[in-house]
Image (tube, rainbow, N blue to C red; front, top):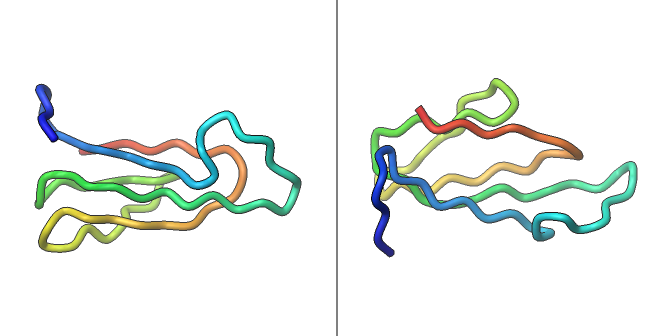
Length: 67
């Protein structure tokens, strides 16, 4: 993978973006970033491992920010 802007972040969701969700659905948010980058999901900082991988399960609408 080649990223052009810093911080470099790759984010994937399961189910995929624009999928239909029910009231009690959860969404897996996971991906890769440069080690040392902080990933914030709905105001909560996620753990990022030494290789830059992160994972979290959330429900409904969410916002994610690299810092």
